[in-house]
Image (tube, rainbow, N blue to C red; front, side):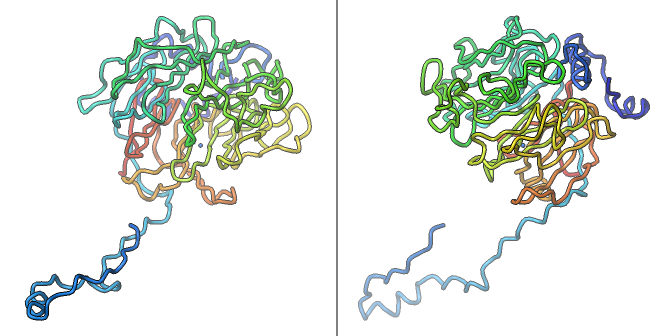
Length: 433
């Protein structure tokens, strides 16, 4: 089993609180997910056109000239907007605690700009100026927190008329639920099931969900669990397991498959798949400035990886599992269409044991982080920054000097500021020191 790769004294120095039973179970499950055994595991202003004024009568010309407003300053006299500073991973940062929950798991921005936080046990809460609000959705009676299960993700439709919840049910199956939103108000009791999928094991559920720049719903699923992909889902296009799915809940009942999905005409393939070859994609994201897709994939024994592709290059992308673990061969030879990670690190090294993705910073409070991908590791809560150029080459990578605890997720508010979610309870916002 992987160790926590951190001296006991350092771990005690963090803000530890007694674990609730569900949290403790998931902690054990996530650590088991890192073990290479055969037992069950748990677990990116238009130009102005000059127009001649109306002709002025000769007698009034002098008066009109005197009353005219002064000419605008010449171009070289106009104020020049200062450009953003170059990315700087040595910038001093801190974490401000904004809420405490039992097991925060994900966050999303509602249609009116309200920031919502999901509790793994099955509730969704608004974050207000007065703190954490009462739940607006409660599916706790319909899910379980055994192993890696529970409420795992949430996202709002592009038009704000629906909230999508990704969870597992009492039997462990993946469920995508649509919750009605009317006039900006979440109708927690008005729900319909959009998508379900049986899971062969209790781990590697993935479960992150987002609405992409194209307005479609994207759902990330792990390979079904167990060590080494025993059901061989990673390279199997007939199953949605081990893949990133893209569907259109508003286009059909219960959903439609976008016509641009790459495997619609592939015999036997699951049409929902947009990309595949994933082991346990524990958090993915879209860069709001570039539409780039970032996927953090938890490794088996050796490599934790960060994948990044342009949205246009996502359809059909093969991220390699289980033939590849990062850039290393695992169960076979590297496939010709393998999309290698832009960054990877040792699973058993000091950086941790299970990667947690990850968002690109596009806020305004810390301009030095603009364009930097922020991520962490569940077993080593140090928040890190990764800067990649357009060619996919790593420009810089560094620890950022802040420890988010048992980091299980990142989330972004309406202003683009980034929050770190500690499974042990704390929700903190990254701020300049």
